[in-house]
Image (cartoon, rainbow, N blue to C red; front, side, top):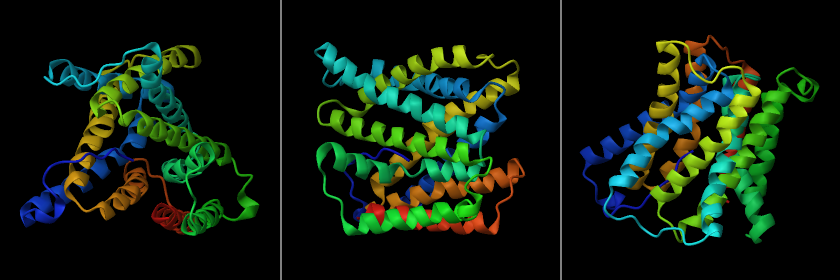
Length: 301
């Protein structure tokens, strides 16, 4: 999942070498983001503490760039503006806390796949809140995704499995990511992207810090290895992956945005198999492919 931006050079006028570089950036960014659940599993601190360091450390380069840039953009003028700028961060904090918790409750493949249901919830919430129309293609994609989730879990008889709670938490985290995306859309008509990201990251860190202190025993990693893990999830996955994908999608055709949807769960599953020895069964692989097809159809609608 990533934010896109507009640049002056259209994709159709790129040289082949530039196009290859953009594609390489897209693939590398997808791999970087795919690594985030692996970092969470390997972290010395709990999932909520890892989520805090993820946004708090990533805030450092964002904040420095914001402070030293020449064009500051439109500043908030009232407390309502400030509260609206903090709202995406609250949604992001709940999303990250839920997703990180689910990574330790179910398989990395399931958690990452279900967290990518956010585009479906964006459409549902857009219809419920703003009466945006829902097409037949979207409904068809929703049905396909639901069938895929059933297959992913091994059929109706397996729905009571021990990992079901983790799958439900991952799905709930996707709902809050949808809220994050919708709140960003409401702000983007007035404030620039960097200001929104700085405010959102700061408010997310402010929400996650007390939650980590209350619910988890350790906030600070105890070794150089532990710090390398939280630095990795902050700079490689959270900041680096988003920057690479944002750059790539500014130069590639819009259809490639669907590729980013496939990269994260597929990449996370491969990394989980390689690093964590987490196997992928036939039913899980088939269900995952069906869910991804459903999401792709829903997005086209």
